[in-house]
Amino acid sequence: MPALHLSRTDKTPEVTFDPVAGLFDMRGCSIPEDADKFYAPLFDLLDRYCKEPAPQTTVRLALAYFNSSSSKYILDLLRLIDDLHTSGKGVVSLEWSFEPDDLDMQEAGQDYRSLLEMPVRLIARATP
Image 1 (cartoon, rainbow, N blue to C red):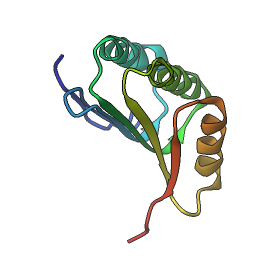
Image 2 (cartoon, one colour):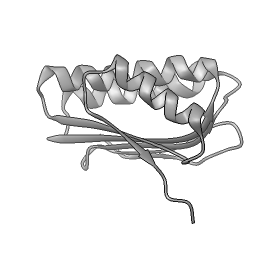
Image 3 (spheres, rainbow, N blue to C red):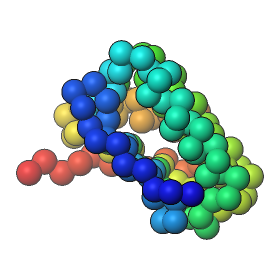
Image 4 (cartoon, helix red, strand yellow):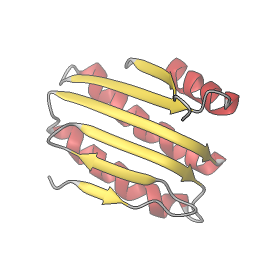
């Protein structure tokens, strides 16, 4: 399975996926005009990955903002990875990063953590 890199735009996050290293990283802002068009290929990619995953999978999300339609797709992606965790096919974890003063993103991470079985680490990013 090939690696993937999508560059960040004003409306979509940067996405890096390295199936060999078991890393899925998404950062930036997620307010796509057509959330299905942006997220459906990512869901398909992760669905294929979950059939033959790396021994350890790390999901890193560092989003500054996402709209309500993105929220649903993000949850769908995380549930897919959570199913990998509960299947016992490997070690899976989520790192949810947020700015220290961004209570909305911190609460979003807490909300997702409450909906998932996999370990979720909330990380307040250090400010420069």
